[in-house]
Length: 290
Length: 160
Image (cartoon, rainbow over all chains, first blue to last red):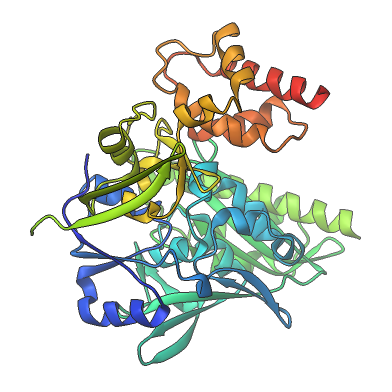
Protein backbone atom coordinates (compact mmCIF):
# COMPACT_ATOMS: atom_id res chain seq x y z
CA UNK A 1 0.00 0.00 0.00
CA UNK A 2 0.96 3.63 0.08
CA UNK A 3 2.03 5.47 3.22
CA UNK A 4 -0.57 7.65 4.94
CA UNK A 5 -0.21 11.42 4.90
CA UNK A 6 2.47 12.85 7.14
CA UNK A 7 4.61 15.89 7.42
CA UNK A 8 8.34 15.60 6.67
CA UNK A 9 11.28 17.64 7.88
CA UNK A 10 14.91 17.00 7.17
CA UNK A 11 16.93 17.85 10.27
CA UNK A 12 20.01 19.88 9.43
CA UNK A 13 21.72 19.38 12.80
CA UNK A 14 21.36 17.21 15.90
CA UNK A 15 20.05 20.27 17.76
CA UNK A 16 17.44 20.81 15.07
CA UNK A 17 16.31 17.18 15.38
CA UNK A 18 16.09 17.51 19.17
CA UNK A 19 14.12 20.73 18.87
CA UNK A 20 11.65 18.97 16.57
CA UNK A 21 11.39 16.05 19.00
CA UNK A 22 10.65 18.47 21.85
CA UNK A 23 7.97 20.13 19.79
CA UNK A 24 6.21 17.06 18.42
CA UNK A 25 6.83 14.41 21.09
CA UNK A 26 5.00 11.16 20.48
CA UNK A 27 3.53 12.41 17.19
CA UNK A 28 6.99 12.34 15.61
CA UNK A 29 9.05 9.44 14.32
CA UNK A 30 12.74 9.58 13.64
CA UNK A 31 13.49 8.50 10.08
CA UNK A 32 16.94 6.93 10.13
CA UNK A 33 17.54 4.14 7.60
CA UNK A 34 13.80 3.71 7.31
CA UNK A 35 14.05 -0.02 6.65
CA UNK A 36 11.54 -0.82 9.40
CA UNK A 37 9.68 2.48 9.60
CA UNK A 38 8.86 2.68 5.90
CA UNK A 39 7.25 -0.79 5.78
CA UNK A 40 5.07 0.06 8.77
CA UNK A 41 4.03 3.29 7.05
CA UNK A 42 3.36 1.55 3.73
CA UNK A 43 1.27 -1.04 5.56
CA UNK A 44 -0.36 1.74 7.58
CA UNK A 45 0.56 0.12 10.86
CA UNK A 46 1.91 3.45 11.94
CA UNK A 47 0.54 6.94 11.31
CA UNK A 48 2.94 9.53 12.72
CA UNK A 49 2.20 13.20 12.13
CA UNK A 50 5.75 14.06 11.28
CA UNK A 51 8.87 12.27 10.15
CA UNK A 52 12.15 13.79 11.26
CA UNK A 53 14.73 12.70 8.70
CA UNK A 54 18.18 12.49 10.33
CA UNK A 55 19.95 10.90 7.35
CA UNK A 56 22.14 13.89 6.63
CA UNK A 57 23.47 14.28 10.17
CA UNK A 58 27.04 13.26 9.47
CA UNK A 59 27.97 13.82 13.14
CA UNK A 60 26.08 10.63 13.93
CA UNK A 61 28.01 8.47 11.46
CA UNK A 62 31.23 6.56 11.79
CA UNK A 63 33.15 4.02 13.84
CA UNK A 64 36.10 4.94 16.06
CA UNK A 65 38.06 3.65 19.03
CA UNK A 66 38.01 5.44 22.36
CA UNK A 67 40.55 3.53 24.48
CA UNK A 68 39.16 -0.01 24.69
CA UNK A 69 35.70 1.01 23.57
CA UNK A 70 34.35 0.90 20.04
CA UNK A 71 32.13 3.93 19.46
CA UNK A 72 29.63 3.56 16.67
CA UNK A 73 27.55 6.54 15.59
CA UNK A 74 23.86 5.69 15.65
CA UNK A 75 23.44 6.56 11.98
CA UNK A 76 26.21 4.24 10.83
CA UNK A 77 24.73 1.98 8.19
CA UNK A 78 24.81 -1.81 8.55
CA UNK A 79 27.00 -2.11 5.47
CA UNK A 80 29.65 0.13 7.05
CA UNK A 81 29.60 -1.90 10.27
CA UNK A 82 29.84 -5.08 8.22
CA UNK A 83 32.87 -3.84 6.26
CA UNK A 84 34.62 -2.16 9.20
CA UNK A 85 38.09 -3.37 10.14
CA UNK A 86 37.61 -2.01 13.66
CA UNK A 87 34.47 -4.12 14.08
CA UNK A 88 36.16 -7.20 12.57
CA UNK A 89 39.11 -6.84 14.97
CA UNK A 90 37.37 -5.72 18.15
CA UNK A 91 33.77 -6.93 17.88
CA UNK A 92 33.81 -10.32 16.16
CA UNK A 93 30.36 -11.09 17.58
CA UNK A 94 28.86 -8.20 15.64
CA UNK A 95 30.90 -9.06 12.55
CA UNK A 96 29.51 -12.59 12.72
CA UNK A 97 25.93 -11.37 13.18
CA UNK A 98 25.95 -8.71 10.48
CA UNK A 99 25.49 -10.98 7.44
CA UNK A 100 22.25 -12.14 9.07
CA UNK A 101 20.88 -8.59 9.20
CA UNK A 102 18.41 -8.55 6.31
CA UNK A 103 19.69 -8.34 2.74
CA UNK A 104 22.22 -6.25 0.89
CA UNK A 105 19.84 -3.51 -0.25
CA UNK A 106 18.47 -3.17 3.28
CA UNK A 107 21.94 -3.16 4.86
CA UNK A 108 22.92 -0.35 2.49
CA UNK A 109 20.29 1.89 4.12
CA UNK A 110 19.49 0.46 7.56
CA UNK A 111 21.39 1.82 10.55
CA UNK A 112 22.69 0.19 13.72
CA UNK A 113 21.11 2.90 15.85
CA UNK A 114 17.77 2.49 14.15
CA UNK A 115 17.86 -1.23 14.80
CA UNK A 116 18.67 -0.75 18.48
CA UNK A 117 16.24 2.13 19.04
CA UNK A 118 13.35 0.26 17.40
CA UNK A 119 14.04 -2.86 19.51
CA UNK A 120 12.39 -5.32 17.19
CA UNK A 121 12.51 -8.59 19.17
CA UNK A 122 13.86 -10.47 16.13
CA UNK A 123 16.67 -8.00 15.46
CA UNK A 124 20.27 -9.13 15.78
CA UNK A 125 21.97 -5.96 17.00
CA UNK A 126 20.07 -5.53 20.28
CA UNK A 127 21.04 -9.08 21.29
CA UNK A 128 24.69 -8.54 20.34
CA UNK A 129 25.12 -5.29 22.22
CA UNK A 130 23.43 -6.79 25.27
CA UNK A 131 25.80 -9.77 25.15
CA UNK A 132 28.77 -7.40 24.92
CA UNK A 133 27.60 -5.08 27.70
CA UNK A 134 27.35 -1.96 25.57
CA UNK A 135 26.29 1.48 26.73
CA UNK A 136 23.86 3.57 24.71
CA UNK A 137 24.16 7.33 24.55
CA UNK A 138 20.90 9.22 24.11
CA UNK A 139 20.60 12.95 23.75
CA UNK A 140 17.81 15.44 24.33
CA UNK A 141 17.78 19.21 24.31
CA UNK A 142 18.78 19.08 27.98
CA UNK A 143 21.89 17.00 27.33
CA UNK A 144 23.19 13.48 26.99
CA UNK A 145 22.75 10.45 29.21
CA UNK A 146 24.15 6.96 29.08
CA UNK A 147 22.02 3.86 29.43
CA UNK A 148 23.51 0.38 29.91
CA UNK A 149 22.16 -2.11 27.36
CA UNK A 150 20.85 -4.20 30.30
CA UNK A 151 18.46 -1.36 31.16
CA UNK A 152 17.61 -0.24 27.64
CA UNK A 153 15.28 -2.94 26.33
CA UNK A 154 11.94 -2.94 28.14
CA UNK A 155 9.75 -5.06 25.88
CA UNK A 156 8.20 -5.29 22.45
CA UNK A 157 9.51 -2.17 20.67
CA UNK A 158 9.83 -0.52 24.07
CA UNK A 159 13.06 0.99 25.31
CA UNK A 160 14.38 3.35 27.98
CA UNK A 161 14.70 6.11 25.39
CA UNK A 162 12.32 8.97 26.20
CA UNK A 163 10.18 10.51 23.46
CA UNK A 164 12.31 13.63 23.29
CA UNK A 165 15.58 11.70 23.11
CA UNK A 166 17.64 10.64 20.13
CA UNK A 167 19.96 7.65 20.25
CA UNK A 168 23.26 9.14 19.13
CA UNK A 169 25.98 6.60 19.87
CA UNK A 170 26.67 3.01 20.84
CA UNK A 171 29.69 2.44 23.05
CA UNK A 172 30.71 -1.19 22.94
CA UNK A 173 33.63 -2.57 24.97
CA UNK A 174 36.19 -4.20 22.72
CA UNK A 175 35.97 -7.99 23.02
CA UNK A 176 38.75 -9.39 25.18
CA UNK A 177 41.26 -11.44 23.22
CA UNK A 178 40.99 -14.31 25.71
CA UNK A 179 37.21 -14.47 25.22
CA UNK A 180 35.18 -16.10 22.49
CA UNK A 181 31.87 -15.18 20.94
CA UNK A 182 29.31 -17.04 18.89
CA UNK A 183 26.27 -15.80 17.00
CA UNK A 184 23.64 -18.17 15.65
CA UNK A 185 20.13 -17.76 14.37
CA UNK A 186 17.51 -19.76 12.54
CA UNK A 187 15.43 -18.14 9.81
CA UNK A 188 13.32 -19.53 6.97
CA UNK A 189 15.33 -17.65 4.35
CA UNK A 190 18.80 -16.19 4.88
CA UNK A 191 18.43 -12.61 6.05
CA UNK A 192 14.79 -12.91 7.04
CA UNK A 193 13.58 -12.25 10.55
CA UNK A 194 14.98 -14.83 12.92
CA UNK A 195 12.67 -17.43 14.42
CA UNK A 196 15.14 -17.96 17.27
CA UNK A 197 18.66 -16.76 17.89
CA UNK A 198 21.50 -16.57 20.39
CA UNK A 199 24.45 -14.28 20.99
CA UNK A 200 27.08 -15.72 23.33
CA UNK A 201 30.18 -14.06 24.73
CA UNK A 202 32.57 -15.28 27.41
CA UNK A 203 35.58 -17.34 28.25
CA UNK A 204 36.50 -20.96 27.80
CA UNK A 205 39.49 -21.96 29.92
CA UNK A 206 40.72 -25.43 29.05
CA UNK A 207 37.40 -27.17 28.86
CA UNK A 208 35.75 -25.01 31.51
CA UNK A 209 33.30 -22.29 30.60
CA UNK A 210 33.61 -19.06 32.55
CA UNK A 211 31.86 -15.72 32.48
CA UNK A 212 29.76 -16.78 29.53
CA UNK A 213 26.79 -14.56 28.76
CA UNK A 214 23.96 -16.05 26.73
CA UNK A 215 21.48 -13.67 25.15
CA UNK A 216 18.40 -15.05 23.42
CA UNK A 217 16.38 -13.14 20.87
CA UNK A 218 13.49 -13.50 18.42
CA UNK A 219 11.56 -15.91 20.62
CA UNK A 220 11.06 -13.40 23.45
CA UNK A 221 9.55 -9.90 23.48
CA UNK A 222 13.03 -8.42 23.94
CA UNK A 223 16.63 -9.66 23.93
CA UNK A 224 16.82 -11.77 27.07
CA UNK A 225 19.77 -12.85 29.18
CA UNK A 226 19.46 -16.54 30.03
CA UNK A 227 20.25 -16.10 33.74
CA UNK A 228 19.39 -19.62 34.83
CA UNK A 229 21.10 -21.21 31.86
CA UNK A 230 24.20 -19.12 32.56
CA UNK A 231 24.20 -20.21 36.21
CA UNK A 232 24.09 -23.84 35.10
CA UNK A 233 26.85 -23.25 32.59
CA UNK A 234 29.60 -21.16 34.13
CA UNK A 235 32.30 -22.97 36.07
CA UNK A 236 31.50 -26.28 34.38
CA UNK A 237 33.21 -28.19 31.64
CA UNK A 238 31.14 -28.49 28.47
CA UNK A 239 29.75 -32.02 28.44
CA UNK A 240 26.50 -33.82 27.71
CA UNK A 241 25.58 -33.48 31.39
CA UNK A 242 26.26 -29.75 31.36
CA UNK A 243 24.27 -29.34 28.15
CA UNK A 244 21.34 -31.14 29.74
CA UNK A 245 21.50 -28.99 32.86
CA UNK A 246 21.82 -25.76 30.86
CA UNK A 247 18.96 -26.50 28.49
CA UNK A 248 16.77 -27.59 31.40
CA UNK A 249 17.56 -24.34 33.20
CA UNK A 250 16.75 -22.39 30.05
CA UNK A 251 13.10 -23.36 30.48
CA UNK A 252 13.01 -20.95 33.41
CA UNK A 253 14.50 -18.10 31.38
CA UNK A 254 12.37 -18.11 28.27
CA UNK A 255 8.70 -17.79 27.49
CA UNK A 256 8.72 -17.87 23.69
CA UNK A 257 6.00 -15.98 21.85
CA UNK A 258 4.02 -18.19 19.50
CA UNK A 259 3.48 -16.81 16.02
CA UNK A 260 3.20 -18.04 12.45
CA UNK A 261 6.77 -19.32 12.64
CA UNK A 262 5.92 -21.78 15.34
CA UNK A 263 4.57 -22.58 18.76
CA UNK A 264 6.13 -21.56 22.03
CA UNK A 265 7.25 -25.15 22.66
CA UNK A 266 8.90 -25.41 19.27
CA UNK A 267 10.83 -22.19 19.76
CA UNK A 268 11.96 -23.24 23.22
CA UNK A 269 13.22 -26.47 21.69
CA UNK A 270 15.06 -24.56 18.97
CA UNK A 271 16.67 -22.19 21.48
CA UNK A 272 17.93 -25.26 23.36
CA UNK A 273 19.36 -26.64 20.14
CA UNK A 274 21.09 -23.33 19.40
CA UNK A 275 22.47 -23.20 22.94
CA UNK A 276 24.14 -26.56 22.41
CA UNK A 277 25.51 -25.56 19.03
CA UNK A 278 26.73 -22.21 20.33
CA UNK A 279 28.68 -23.78 23.19
CA UNK A 280 30.09 -26.49 20.90
CA UNK A 281 31.32 -23.67 18.69
CA UNK A 282 32.63 -21.62 21.62
CA UNK A 283 34.71 -24.54 22.90
CA UNK A 284 35.99 -25.29 19.40
CA UNK A 285 36.94 -21.63 18.82
CA UNK A 286 38.71 -21.39 22.18
CA UNK A 287 40.62 -24.57 21.23
CA UNK A 288 41.60 -23.07 17.87
CA UNK A 289 42.77 -19.85 19.49
CA UNK A 290 44.89 -21.67 22.10
CA UNK B 1 -4.43 16.15 7.46
CA UNK B 2 -3.64 17.98 4.26
CA UNK B 3 -1.21 16.61 1.72
CA UNK B 4 2.22 18.13 2.36
CA UNK B 5 4.20 18.77 -0.81
CA UNK B 6 7.92 19.01 -1.37
CA UNK B 7 10.06 19.95 -4.35
CA UNK B 8 12.78 17.44 -5.12
CA UNK B 9 15.69 17.67 -7.47
CA UNK B 10 17.68 14.63 -8.48
CA UNK B 11 19.36 12.92 -11.38
CA UNK B 12 17.54 9.85 -12.68
CA UNK B 13 19.47 7.85 -15.27
CA UNK B 14 21.50 10.94 -16.06
CA UNK B 15 18.43 13.11 -16.51
CA UNK B 16 18.06 16.12 -14.19
CA UNK B 17 14.57 16.03 -12.69
CA UNK B 18 12.78 18.64 -10.59
CA UNK B 19 9.24 17.88 -9.42
CA UNK B 20 6.88 18.92 -6.67
CA UNK B 21 5.33 15.84 -5.10
CA UNK B 22 3.55 14.71 -1.93
CA UNK B 23 6.19 14.08 0.78
CA UNK B 24 4.88 10.56 1.28
CA UNK B 25 5.77 9.50 -2.27
CA UNK B 26 8.35 6.73 -2.19
CA UNK B 27 11.22 6.70 -4.62
CA UNK B 28 9.92 4.05 -7.02
CA UNK B 29 6.48 5.60 -7.34
CA UNK B 30 8.28 8.83 -8.11
CA UNK B 31 10.48 7.22 -10.74
CA UNK B 32 7.61 5.32 -12.35
CA UNK B 33 4.85 7.91 -12.31
CA UNK B 34 6.62 11.27 -12.24
CA UNK B 35 9.78 10.54 -14.22
CA UNK B 36 8.33 7.78 -16.40
CA UNK B 37 10.88 4.98 -16.08
CA UNK B 38 8.73 1.92 -15.45
CA UNK B 39 11.49 -0.71 -15.34
CA UNK B 40 11.61 -0.71 -11.55
CA UNK B 41 8.70 -2.80 -10.35
CA UNK B 42 6.61 -2.62 -7.23
CA UNK B 43 5.83 -5.99 -5.73
CA UNK B 44 5.26 -6.10 -2.02
CA UNK B 45 5.87 -2.45 -1.20
CA UNK B 46 7.27 -3.32 2.21
CA UNK B 47 10.84 -4.28 1.50
CA UNK B 48 10.57 -8.03 1.15
CA UNK B 49 10.53 -8.85 -2.57
CA UNK B 50 13.33 -6.72 -4.04
CA UNK B 51 11.56 -6.00 -7.36
CA UNK B 52 11.93 -2.25 -6.75
CA UNK B 53 15.72 -2.31 -6.28
CA UNK B 54 17.38 0.83 -7.63
CA UNK B 55 20.79 2.39 -7.18
CA UNK B 56 21.12 5.59 -5.17
CA UNK B 57 24.53 7.27 -5.07
CA UNK B 58 26.18 3.98 -6.02
CA UNK B 59 24.40 1.61 -3.63
CA UNK B 60 21.49 -0.70 -4.39
CA UNK B 61 18.50 0.09 -2.16
CA UNK B 62 14.85 -0.84 -1.83
CA UNK B 63 13.05 1.83 -3.81
CA UNK B 64 9.86 1.34 -1.79
CA UNK B 65 11.62 1.95 1.53
CA UNK B 66 13.04 5.35 0.70
CA UNK B 67 11.07 8.52 0.22
CA UNK B 68 11.67 10.44 -2.97
CA UNK B 69 12.26 13.44 -0.69
CA UNK B 70 15.22 11.61 0.83
CA UNK B 71 16.82 11.21 -2.59
CA UNK B 72 16.88 14.97 -3.08
CA UNK B 73 20.25 15.84 -4.60
CA UNK B 74 21.12 12.19 -5.24
CA UNK B 75 22.07 10.32 -8.34
CA UNK B 76 19.58 7.54 -9.04
CA UNK B 77 20.05 4.74 -11.54
CA UNK B 78 17.39 2.23 -12.52
CA UNK B 79 17.51 -0.79 -14.78
CA UNK B 80 17.04 1.55 -17.76
CA UNK B 81 20.10 3.53 -16.73
CA UNK B 82 22.44 0.60 -16.23
CA UNK B 83 21.13 -0.99 -19.42
CA UNK B 84 22.10 2.13 -21.36
CA UNK B 85 25.60 2.21 -19.92
CA UNK B 86 26.14 -1.43 -20.90
CA UNK B 87 27.44 -2.22 -17.43
CA UNK B 88 25.58 -5.52 -17.28
CA UNK B 89 24.98 -6.23 -20.98
CA UNK B 90 26.82 -9.55 -20.59
CA UNK B 91 24.67 -10.53 -17.63
CA UNK B 92 21.47 -9.57 -19.44
CA UNK B 93 22.46 -11.76 -22.41
CA UNK B 94 23.29 -14.57 -20.02
CA UNK B 95 19.89 -14.25 -18.30
CA UNK B 96 18.29 -14.91 -21.68
CA UNK B 97 20.69 -17.70 -22.57
CA UNK B 98 20.25 -19.51 -19.25
CA UNK B 99 16.48 -18.95 -19.00
CA UNK B 100 16.98 -16.92 -15.81
CA UNK B 101 13.60 -15.29 -16.20
CA UNK B 102 10.11 -16.29 -17.15
CA UNK B 103 7.56 -13.57 -16.46
CA UNK B 104 10.30 -10.99 -15.96
CA UNK B 105 8.69 -9.12 -13.07
CA UNK B 106 11.58 -9.69 -10.67
CA UNK B 107 14.28 -9.35 -13.32
CA UNK B 108 15.09 -5.62 -13.02
CA UNK B 109 15.58 -6.04 -9.27
CA UNK B 110 17.59 -9.23 -9.75
CA UNK B 111 19.87 -7.47 -12.22
CA UNK B 112 20.33 -4.39 -10.01
CA UNK B 113 21.32 -6.59 -7.07
CA UNK B 114 23.51 -8.87 -9.20
CA UNK B 115 25.27 -5.80 -10.60
CA UNK B 116 26.39 -4.88 -7.08
CA UNK B 117 27.59 -8.44 -6.48
CA UNK B 118 29.53 -8.59 -9.74
CA UNK B 119 31.11 -5.22 -8.97
CA UNK B 120 32.92 -6.92 -6.07
CA UNK B 121 35.03 -8.73 -8.67
CA UNK B 122 35.79 -11.62 -6.35
CA UNK B 123 35.70 -15.40 -6.39
CA UNK B 124 32.35 -16.62 -5.14
CA UNK B 125 30.60 -19.91 -4.60
CA UNK B 126 27.02 -20.63 -5.60
CA UNK B 127 26.18 -20.41 -1.90
CA UNK B 128 27.70 -16.89 -1.76
CA UNK B 129 25.60 -15.87 -4.76
CA UNK B 130 22.45 -17.31 -3.22
CA UNK B 131 23.15 -15.51 0.03
CA UNK B 132 23.73 -12.17 -1.70
CA UNK B 133 20.66 -12.55 -3.89
CA UNK B 134 18.47 -13.80 -1.02
CA UNK B 135 16.67 -10.46 -0.74
CA UNK B 136 15.10 -10.79 -4.18
CA UNK B 137 12.11 -13.03 -4.76
CA UNK B 138 11.44 -14.88 -8.01
CA UNK B 139 8.24 -16.87 -8.31
CA UNK B 140 9.01 -18.47 -11.69
CA UNK B 141 12.52 -19.81 -12.03
CA UNK B 142 13.30 -21.52 -8.75
CA UNK B 143 16.47 -19.39 -8.70
CA UNK B 144 18.74 -22.08 -10.10
CA UNK B 145 19.00 -20.47 -13.54
CA UNK B 146 19.54 -17.03 -12.01
CA UNK B 147 22.46 -18.36 -9.97
CA UNK B 148 23.75 -20.08 -13.13
CA UNK B 149 23.73 -16.81 -15.07
CA UNK B 150 25.43 -14.77 -12.35
CA UNK B 151 28.00 -17.47 -11.70
CA UNK B 152 28.93 -17.76 -15.38
CA UNK B 153 29.33 -14.01 -15.81
CA UNK B 154 31.38 -13.69 -12.64
CA UNK B 155 33.67 -16.49 -13.83
CA UNK B 156 33.93 -14.97 -17.32
CA UNK B 157 34.73 -11.54 -15.95
CA UNK B 158 37.34 -12.86 -13.52
CA UNK B 159 39.03 -14.71 -16.39
CA UNK B 160 39.02 -11.39 -18.24
